[in-house]
Image 1 (cartoon, rainbow, N blue to C red):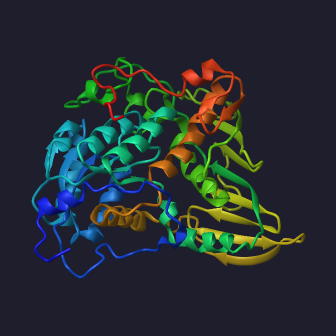
Image 2 (cartoon, rainbow, N blue to C red; image 1 turned 180 degrees about the vertical axis):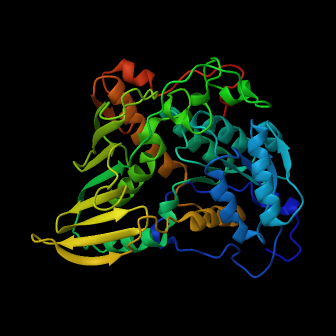
Image 3 (tube, rainbow, N blue to C red; image 1 turned 180 degrees about the horizontal axis):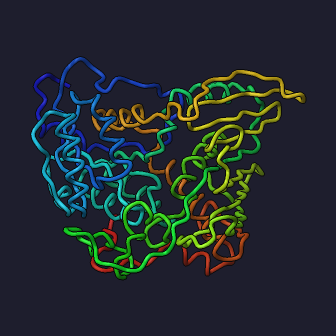
Length: 444
């Protein structure tokens, strides 16, 4: 790329097809710019200005020379004001444009990419529209609210040649790379079972009466494709996760990280053939959530390997010392791995301690590296570790478990055709209805 590269040339190059394949650990961490020149900054728009987006923006501060934040989008003007204060303080640049309509970002021909951190029910509609308009997308986990949205995101990424990165930041963590190298070298033999857990205390959220939306909030747009209903404070900031119209419960909010790492540890490149899911109210009596407060799910893969997921709302001590983690069971030992940034290996019949890295419960989690990889991919048209296919396989574990829990408890699945076997009720739940006019764009 020449020193005098123009934005028009950059945008033209950005339309080239991007291979949407999983990235091996050997990909490494290339510098943001592969050569010594300084091409135009990547112009980003952020959609959803609360919660996790603060972490993303703080992580981008170290990339000031490479990015500019051109747009802030949120249906709540109070969220925009908070984010604008952070952006203008840290980036020391002109204030970004502000809007409640993500379409304004989509229509900006000079915008290169968007970061999407809305409630789950908005992820796919916005991401599909963005890719259709030539934008690359960083999508918070899970990329899909229902199973079939993941298939559409894969199709759109291929059709429009777009970069996709799901917010599964531990895939880019240096600690993950170290653990992955040991697993590839066979330190614990062949990995046969992965166990993932989310073990943290949760607060009981008592039901609240309906009310008026906060001043200035575009509530109809917040609902978007979700069913029309009166405003309720618990169906809004933060606690929307408890309701199926907008979120995917504990397994799809926090558990998706640990499921993703479990799939990574198994080296799985397919979907399971059988799913067994159980859940109940173990502790949070009176909790307003539509989801169980605990789940136990077993996924059996075509080659016989297993992935086991558990979540509990009462374990202040975590499991194996970690609130979120995995154990990979191999033929010659096992590895305890936490997405907080630590792992330990135990070998042989007596569990002799092997390599150990990291000790902190709240350790390094790969935020900076993951975002840097996305920016590098936008610039150089390279694949990402959490590309559309990889993200879909992990998100599918959330959706398949939810469907099994809501139907028969145990379901057989065809991983090739991506349909349940002999269960029409379950297949109906692979997709959903969208409230007009907030449906999905036609991308295939």
